[in-house]
Length: 314
Image (cartoon, rainbow, N blue to C red; front, top):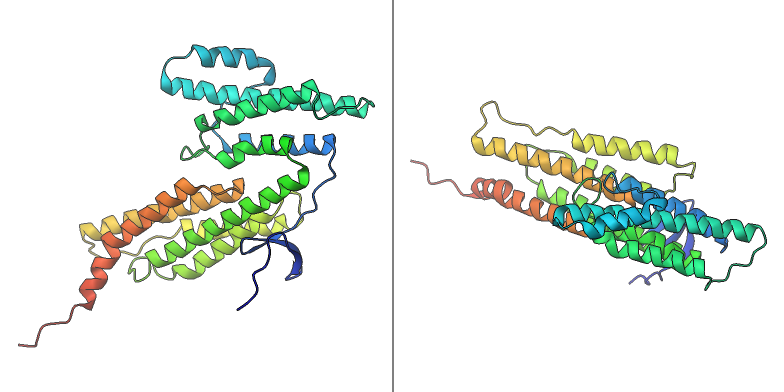
């Protein structure tokens, strides 16, 4: 039996410097030095990434925080209050970023900024309040709020940078595991299908390119090879057209339609997870449940019918 590799092990793997977490070797990036300037840059990058992945209209400037809070507190309609809560969270993130920027400028001018400084505490309070409002925020696709992504700016503020990087590797490993679960489920779902054949190599290509993209930073030169490979793999899966007989039955048409929907939604979910570099457990479970239902409804009855012995010849 091979010895279990401890989490956090750094080694050269296939010519790349990688770190091991939960069964996955992930490309390793050296964390920046522990300075306010580095922390500011990290929080700004995480906040930008966050707004790129959530619903439109909530990137409210921090200077409008009082307006956003008043609108949220005054709203009584539950559906509109959810949106106002998301807008308030956006304003809180931006106000915290403004304060942190000023703290970095003060430090650059020689002013000593202590961890318990009043402005540092205020910045942390804003980020924590925004985190509490995260359940009101939707992913841009409308399916699932990304709780992990929403909490990252506060984690980057409250943790040492090296500890934050470690937490990101854990999330990447979780994302890679979900990608493997999705591709394995799809392979099993369409096994024996007469409409969608030769799917396994395409799913392998998608899974490997997705995991590679998940671990790569945009600033890495490898992005010019990794991103195109992932886009093409997703396109190939999304563009599969189920093969129907010349005179298909209603059941066969329904199978083709549902199979097509599953392939497209699978490609979209993997893309969402890869771009966010965060797992989406609710969406993943729902997709897997749909795959199981599809196989029970369309594939397994036909396989059982094909396996039935023919009656004796007359």
